[in-house]
Length: 349
Image (cartoon, rainbow, N blue to C red; front, side, top):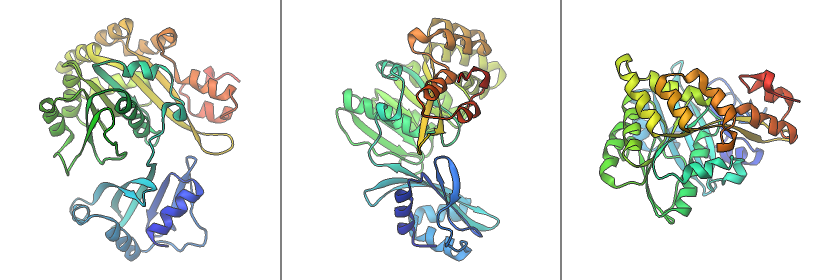
């Protein structure tokens, strides 16, 4: 394998989003959502090469963490050309790694094709906005774009809790304090508990992974702050179930009441291969109006999709509506649109 520097340069050259390193295989990339070999002439990676490359790349503390815990998350800026988010881990007693390249310049709403209603959600001074979707659907980029918008337009104090820090935000109209789990705070939950005393207007949570983090996010949103957080789900209504189901049975009704009171909206997204190359996002948006809040409080989550379908005036939209718009615009194929939908019968050619 070439040096990691040459490999990253090649990734940018061919328009790849990810690099996958695994012993016994030549380096592979993910381009437009598909995995392929970077260079057919590359030899399979050996355990010695993998160890050398990662030892050169990782900070000493991250290397020690990897040896002790058998996996480590990390991020760094490469050549003033890109941010790199990585995860190194052991498999079959040898090292492997996955890297994702992120642009240094945070893309705006227009580039991402985000619905106009996202602007309106960010005008709120308090509440919880969830960005959801499967792994690799661009949640971090959407969240970074939302924070960048606030940074440029609001005189706020913004605190982020991330693991690791992916996009770097400069102080603009707002002050942005970015805290990395492990370096700046012991955990998401510890960082959120500390945020109460740090006078924030906005708190961004890289990912709500555990019950303590979810409870802290709800409490902060209830107490008059705007909270942006991500979750892995298969549609917008499922995000509500994901939060509620994280709590024990006796607590769930109280959590429904909390969520009904503080939820501002849910943005669910998918990335599809675009006709002509690249990828394009489709969005489902749930705006938490009075009817939706009532459904959440009563535990009628299965009825929320019908509320999304009827809430177009307020900005709600199903994923299928977004997919149909992309299909009519000639941006995606019918096969891809149907393949990314939970309700393919609603895709209209």
